[in-house]
Amino acid sequence: WGMLLLYRSDLFEQAGLEPPDTFERIQAAADAHLSAALQLADADTAAFQRVIDAYQLPKGSAEEAAHRTRTIQDALVAAATPPRKLVVLAQDTVNLGERLTDFGNPNVISDVAAAAEAARAAAATARVNIDINLTGITDAARMAPLQASVSAADKAIDAAEALSTRVRKQILA
Image (tube, rainbow, N blue to C red; front, side, top):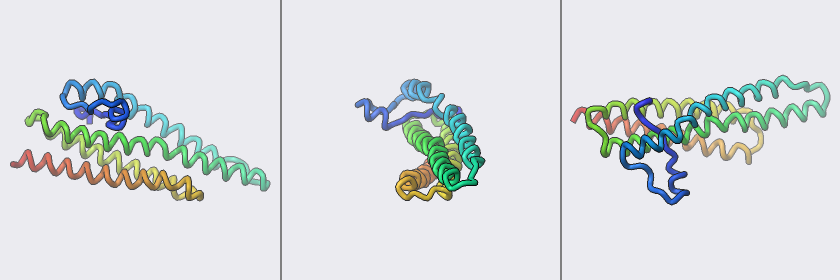
């Protein structure tokens, strides 16, 4: 999805700014957020390592077992953070693609569909990673935000599929 750039619409709204509506503005917004996706990959690796480390803690005594359980719970919640953020980036990618189909070059519109499909795959992968962390979490209050992210991933997947279908229809029209 190198041809499609990312932006955080919520950050623009919080700042009282309009989301980018020209290619140049999209490019500028993307340049400001490009490292976020790469940082998420690194954060995911580190978070997964903390989960592995937590499961390796001793559990011989009641105190050790309780500490291990708390540490595992904390690590699982933390491990869900990078994929939760990836869901947001995937949705932003779709949002950007929708804007690009409105004013982008019709000769390269297939790149928008490719980006939408990549965003769909990212959201689906993030959803599975959140799901696996949810299976080990026992506190309902800690599960709720993760379950909301699963729902957001489902919406991002649906939006990506709709965008890809829209592009295909434009190409074939």
